[in-house]
Amino acid sequence: MSTAVLTSKGQTTIPKDVRDYLGLRPGDRIEFVLTEDKTVLLKPATRPVTDLKGFLPKPPRPVSVEAMNAAVRKRAGR
Image 1 (cartoon, rainbow, N blue to C red):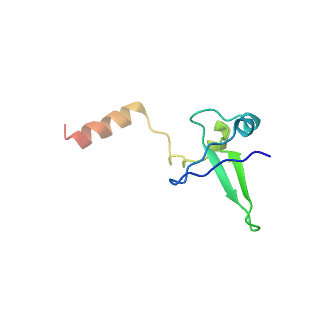
Image 2: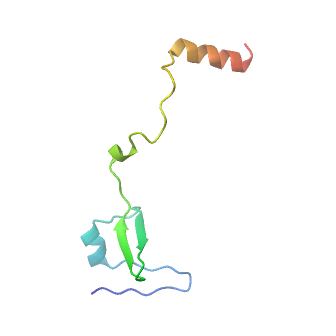
């Protein structure tokens, strides 16, 4: 079992064996999952790009480049 020390600023270092096991690299995000029995799970906060599908609503209809340019010109007052 790995252990770590908590600093006065609330920071800690994840032990190397845990980082290696989770495949964590510098700059990676991690997720802390709190459970009802006061256990905390540590997980890499990675998502495949396919999870983002449907994140943004589809526009009501396709817009042509010409229509976009006209809207920009109108907004710019030309």
